[in-house]
Amino acid sequence: MAAADALHSTAQGLLASGLSPIVNGLIQGIVSGPATVYDRAMDAKFITTGIGGGHHRLFDGGHTIPGAIEAARRASPDDTLVQESLGAVQALLRDASTPMGLPLATWDQDKFNQVARALEVNFHIPRSWFTDLNTFTGAELLGGTVGAVATIFLWNRAETESFHRLVGSLGVAAALSANPLLLLLTLVALARGFHQSRQTGNLSELVDGQVRGGAVAGASFAAVWIVGFAGGPVGLALLVAVVAGLFASRVSGRVSVVGIARVMVELSVRPAGPQGLRRSLAGVGGVLVKGSGGLIQAIRSRRPLRAELQKPAWQPIHRRVGKDRLEPDRNIYP
Image (tube, rainbow, N blue to C red):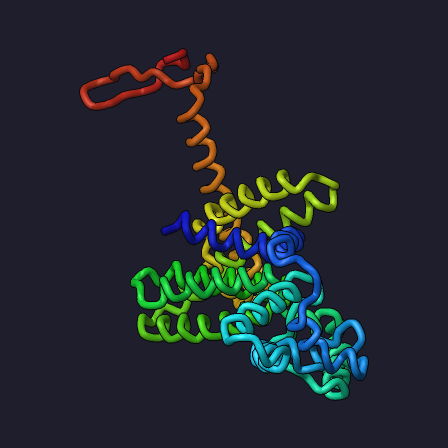
């Protein structure tokens, strides 16, 4: 189960990273071909009015799933229901494999511009990120599908730690890739995880699990970015990302964010005077001393040390004086 959690979180980080165009390219290679009557029917409003320019799929109403089905019905009156369905699916997949992707819903163009401008001015959210949040590509669809399957599989299982890790990886991947499908799935899974934590009374497990899952997805995403920035090949990026994700899963499993936060809060609320500072330093020093002792003990247990001849200390030798009295005789080596 732990290995499956790590692999799923790593996969979410990969699909949110710079490797996602490869997935889109594979989909495009499967459904590529000349434009059909269904493609032209979906672009009918844009062809007539030119609405939206390069982002017309957000505004023309023909590229959502209901809009594509309606456009396919109008495309050719002689086609059967099966032909219309296959034509609509092929056209949707062809558009989903492009960088623009497909819209989650149809917007009014003026309203979209107002919201995008307000987010950029007030919260410094780029317009490109908001646009990406309202669209999804083939790689993002795959990530949402994998996440949905994992959520269904873990929904009623007793391993709440695994479910919390799932929520964390979904949230980080949704934020990094601006994937609206993962965002909706994250909200549903987060509500479920919070409900589980309230039933068990252990909210710290919810926080720690989400941080651990998010750390794995973030590590794989960062590994792909670093290899890509250095100009490495795709295969190396994939290998490094998988290793980084598994390593992050192993390391984060031994760290409790809630425990660290409690220690920091305890240190911060202590008195600020010399006595409080002295106690805080003594506590930190004690931790360092214990940790150093444990490290030295571990090193010695793994590598035997050579015994050094040391000059023993002087010790007095006593002699008996009388029946019950001893007095030092002289200092000699024992």
